[in-house]
Picture 1 (cartoon, rainbow, N blue to C red):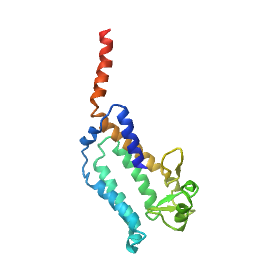
Picture 2: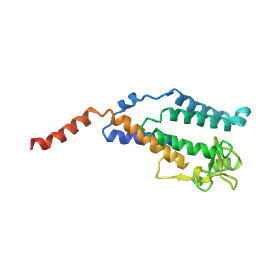
Picture 3: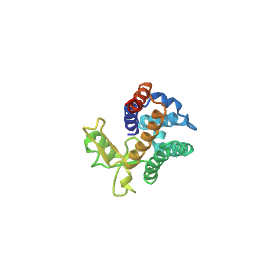
Picture 4: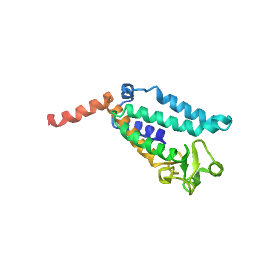
Length: 198
């Protein structure tokens, strides 16, 4: 879900006169950690059904990824939006930690994702997800918000995902608007100068 928020923020930043050049000004402490954490999650997701020890340790690995991610966000909390992203990641971490290292998913909310996905959840695991049951702790923090058509990418998200997207939006807007496009600058100057010439 956070990738959707990033794409939306980039588009809005562009229409507001911002520039992608602003992303080059991004200076994050421990920035090298982010791509590594993403890679670890993808590797575990694709290999946990093929390699037994990865399947057994996947929940622990996911929690370690979240803990490392929280540390990275805390180191960069001075950046605009990062405290909001931290709050969103923390909400997801809490519900996962309380439920065996898996993100609980509402079966009802996920019905539109197809029978195969639902059966995988009911059978036990799907990636880092599991079905919400009567034993699930803090289920309201799980994936309970359905995003179905006309939304372009069908998925079920959590409150933490929404909060993370707000933070990512704020951060990207800050970067893009800190380096406005020349065309946007010129338009603003013309608008400012117009009343003075009247």
